[in-house]
Length: 457
Image (cartoon, rainbow, N blue to C red; front, side, top):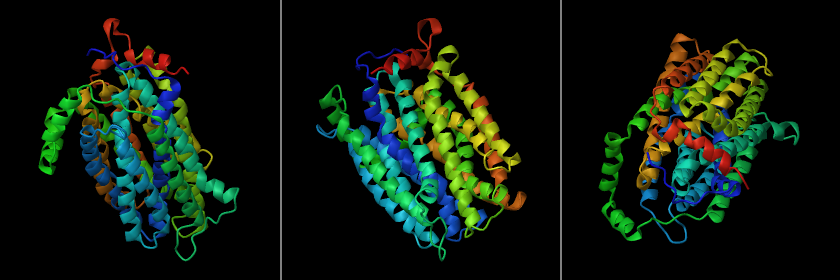
């Protein structure tokens, strides 16, 4: 596939500014992923219901991201650009949701706010993926996604540590009183809402967008694409027109995201049972275990931030496919190993492997995909690609609860083992993905050469 040289090379700080919103987005996601099972359990949810209650998150992503991608592809404002209006709107709504979530007084309210929060986060997040394709030359795609992954990792570290910092260093209560959500969780979400808004606004006000090459043609196409029926037809019709690379990556994504869904839903009850010896969500031990899960998630976020800059180097001496395969196998084996661990310190070790996998999941599939997509439909296809992130989570949400209840006597750690096996399978399947944009004459990896060149001030 020919490489476009029309877009100027971005410096390190330009990549930083255009990606910084992801710091806040991941801050919100980490607080959600590390604490939603804790919130649901504190409000009375049973173990077998957790995965079903979590379905709000992937369902909103499946519905929202393709629509936002389609809308942003067909948006242009001389001041706000194409993607930034959606960054702005999503940030405002997400911040409001993060203030509401820890004040949920009953289970149904927490589930409803999860729908709202995940919808808002997806409105901000989806255009960030297309942002890389919009602004960067093909040779800098891996650099752009690696910068996003680094900032995602940094946001995850701080958000994961926040409840423990509030408890151990600021004396905030970590005990639920009268069945209410602990103060540590409430204050962490308040801080998260502020960080989310500030980070996304940084990108909105420091980064300009590139206008369509032919503005009149763009406006004519936008008029043709107006209307709800037209939008639905275009969105659903995209499945039949997906590039071969996207179809192959969809299989990889399926196994990958079953694993991450299992980890987000079941790590808290697993650690509470294996390490802290309790399944009672109202107990101090369970809440201490939930804080420790935040630390574990901070570890995998920190590892992913560091690995983001190493992965392109490894891809230079091998290939993006091989690197992704290796990372997923390491991550899957790490999840399986949690079955054999009963020490809280040792529970940090598998998170190193998960962090390596997470870095690759946030970088390699999108770098491979971006080179196979038409520029004028980048946001749309990136949104459509999210179907293959959320569909496996929906299936896992519907299946894992009954499986754990009926076959494993509510021993939630077995969900992590199932997830680990799925991740390993996803790694093996990666070897069959077609990566046309990875090589040029002489089979030299394009993405890595550009990555090392682009991280200069």
